[in-house]
Length: 176
View 1 (cartoon, rainbow, N blue to C red):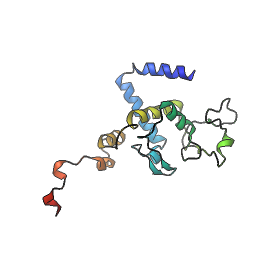
View 2 (cartoon, rainbow, N blue to C red):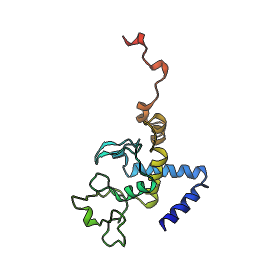
View 3 (cartoon, rainbow, N blue to C red):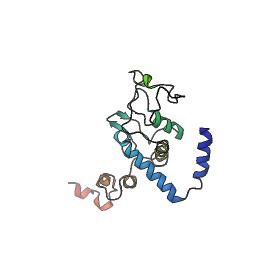
View 4 (cartoon, helix red, strand yellow):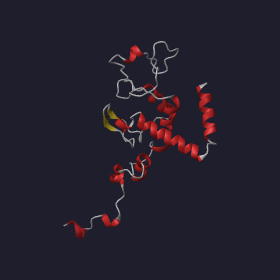
């Protein structure tokens, strides 16, 4: 059933007008910030140290869309990656889609999975996965344009990514 839904969603996505695709990208970016993915993975997705530990680089990830969705929904046991889908580890769930674990399993020290500070709806989780795939994964080092796309073109945060013009570069005669 899930494969059918994903297949239909993919087919429909081929006919989505540009404004709808832009809205989806905006939802993914906003959810990436709302869920505080930036706290560990940083705005650019390169990862590094954060409150949850050393987050992996989403720019270098080998995960596909379904794997990203699963990771965001379920978290990762014994890491700082929390789960974002409400009720996914409930004892009374008919299935236990996340590693076969229940809440009792994920509260043990061996399989601990932190609960996120904010839960996401399934469409938000999918939007984050699509945002990562379309805007972060496989991209080189973060740049000025990406920073402006994330923060807006008036943010001073992006100044460190601004390209240096030729007249601002030191020349051999100005170095001494």
